Amino acid sequence: MRVDFGRKFVKQLKKAPKEIRTAFVERFELFKNDVFHPLLNNHALTGEYKGCRSFNVTGDWRVVFKEVSKDFILFAAIGTHSQLHKGN
Image 1 (cartoon, rainbow, N blue to C red):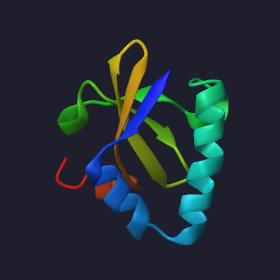
Image 2 (cartoon, rainbow, N blue to C red):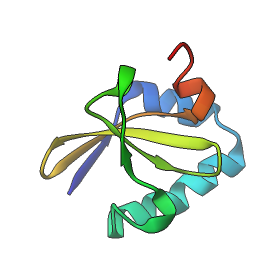
Image 3 (tube, rainbow, N blue to C red):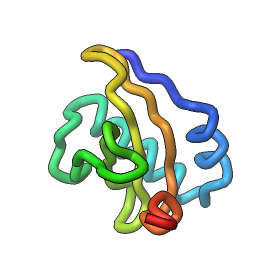
Image 4 (cartoon, rainbow, N blue to C red):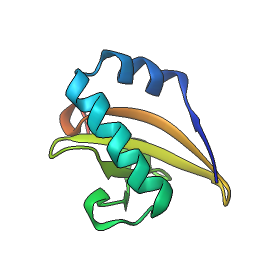
């Protein structure tokens, strides 16, 4: 599986608190081994992010990603639930 990180995602991750960046690295390892690991709560999204999926980094922080093809995933955004879904 090929993974790429979108510009928006990289910018948001750099601004995230250190403990969130650390938690993301741990969850990303789980994701690479099993995209549907129960701790990730990988699920499809609706609304603005329709066609994308999300997984939990912490209780409130989420990663939004898109399966571009069977072998390619693009990480699009990271933030708290309210940051990602404001206005929805």
